[in-house]
Length: 190
Picture 1 (cartoon, helix red, strand yellow):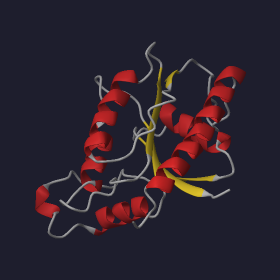
Picture 2: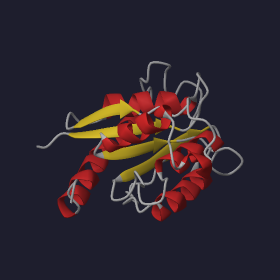
Picture 3: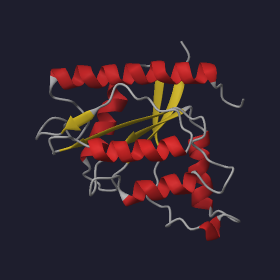
Picture 4: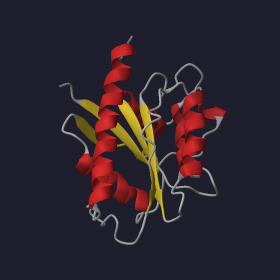
């Protein structure tokens, strides 16, 4: 089996983010065919088209980190019924300047957790719309809206509920299959 590098984005900048815990859990539950690497965006300034002629080094490094992975996974909370501003800013940096969109033909998936009963359903829908515009092939099934309950995922990423563990393991297995299918049809560099 081919091994794929998956860059993941934690949508929250909070140190104690529930979605950071979820990302750690997903990393632990990923099949050995997926190498998980975090792509941080916390150092990016606010995007402006004024930068398009000369991207700052932090933005060039960010775009290179995306170029260096086979696929991307967004692990995001929901802020005011959409994605956090920092994550949207990162997507804006990655998709600019015109003609250099880092997400074009890059397989992607979306997941998130929240204490709310609907998890991060609305944020995920908003993010899917943005990624669709960015021409990123999206894993549309399995959808994963995880309601975070106290103790569900420990600080080290250990999932304490067997049903949730199995669901997340299956999600990562499905992600591998999705990446393989997309990259068979749209090979990198083609």
